[in-house]
Amino acid sequence: MEKRGELTSTQLATIILAIIGFVLVGLGLYTIFEDDSLTNRDLCRLSILSRATVFSAGQQFVPLNCQTEKVCITVDDGAILGFGGVDNSCKQFAGENKNNIDVVEVSENQIKNGEAVTIIQKEVANAMYDCWKMTGQGKLDIFRPGDGTSTPAEDFVKQLTATTNLISLPVKPSCIVCSRVAFSDALYEENKKYDFLKNINFNNFISTQEVPGIGKTYTHAITGEEGAGYGAIAQDEGISAYLGKATLTEREYQDFKNLVINTKFVMTPEQKADYEEIVRTKPNAEAYLSYFTKPTTSNQLSIIFAQIKVSGETPEAAFWNALTTGGIVGAIGVVTGPGSIFNLPAVLIKIGIAGAVSTALAYDSEDTTRKNQAISFETCGKFESIDAGQKGCSLVKLMNWDVNDINSLCYNIEGNL
Amino acid sequence: METNEFLGFIIAVIGVVLLGFFGIKLYNFFVDADMKNAQVFVNDLSGKIEFLKDGESNNFALRGMAGWVLVGWNKDVPIAKDDEIIGKDRKPQKCFDKACLCLCEKSITQCQDVGFCREIDRNIDIKSDGFVDYSIAGGSVGPGGGFSLTKGSFSLNCIYFNKNNLKSLFVEKQKTVVNIKFNEGNKYQSDIDYYIKLKGLGCSFTGP
Image (cartoon, rainbow over all chains, first blue to last red; front, side):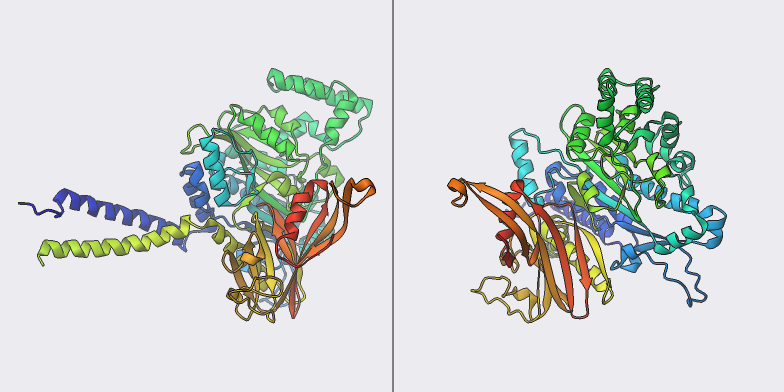
């Protein structure tokens, strides 16, 4: 006979199973977040996955454990047994923990035989690829809603209110700074001797060189599309040669017009109408082109992952609208991901108003900077998230490390710089 | 006590201990994101200060925390007693008798309760300055009393973050003092609310 209040075997088994389950989950979380053997990138990826697998309102309670990777590209200090070397450090990272800086040294021999140029381009390309992979290839719903002006707690209340009242929160891009790549003064000094940085052509590199161990070019690996990468497009299309020009000669205008009108790429009727309007008159074309910033070189680049959530049916439209009103269009990009929404000419035309960075990277030359613009990889579509139907766009963008430029793209930044 | 009861008791104790342990771990991960972010910010900034050599300076781009204020107190500033308000001349008790760098929510008066502080090994001077130029309709000054003009430079001994975006802070480390400066830029008509907010942070403010 059972006594009142005594646990039945079923209840006891349930309790034990619940405790075991709780312990396993707890151990899992503890192991993941406290494991010292995990790299910063692993921790970031895991925290992104954790963030992406909770409902929107709960996202602010899952911190992103992402640390900006710092890469110093420099020359061999020439020291012998640690003595007599020159200062080859990156001054841009003064005050940063040296243990958190990856130093990439190129030797004089590598500079002479051209290997240094490949090493530099590979570092930047790998950083972009790693950023894209780490952030779930743009398919994960990472950021909490909000416009970057409130705390997580306030955003939580806003989100609940919005959900209750069936209204949409403001659409503002959020970002993670995946990497900062700095070029040392010593590298520039060597360039005075050997003039090797002029050989950098990052566009060409990412569209022709393969990602180690993947067997695909960087462009193909990230976008999933074979064929011409941006480098080829830029050279074939010739459109980018006009960017940053506020005045056009009659001939230049006609050439630009022909390029836009006779583009071989498919456009929607709306896009075609937009482009026809842009080139309908010379002042129109000049006004449009004058918005574009001529790309600049910098001694420090950044690789930014940006994401924007939208509630409308056409995420790509909201994406561009949000970026243009924010003062930055983004960049030349390579269309990819679910849906491949943008056509290439649209992306080519929508070059960054701000934040364009020379794809000659550290090399400052009018000739090379004009024909190259910032690179980004982007994707739009439905996120793989717990909130069914949440749409948005993601991009990985190469930018100069400039606070104003980055703020014009990112209203909200997460992770540790 | 029967064997079954004893077993149940042991399981219960183990369960409670484990629940408590993992509950705390989970709490640390999911609750109080603001304070964690504040802690990360202050640790990050003080880390950069530590790694700077004496005489060295740099511009650091740091992620701002919307609604929070960065402030510092020198070693010789008295600690605020329970009935005193924290301000320029009274520092939070959590600073003890040390110079400290703090990030506080909304106003520096809140620093003891809602803020994170870290000791600094020398004096600290935090300053943000800018220029303001706006008019307020309905003011008592000006022709016909139609509007008043506010124009001139301003400065305050703290740095306010209104957004979660990047802020560029100039940090200079000298032998006896660390200077942290932020340029607020020009504030115009559209920035009135922001300017008023700066005045009400509890920091030492000079300007129109």
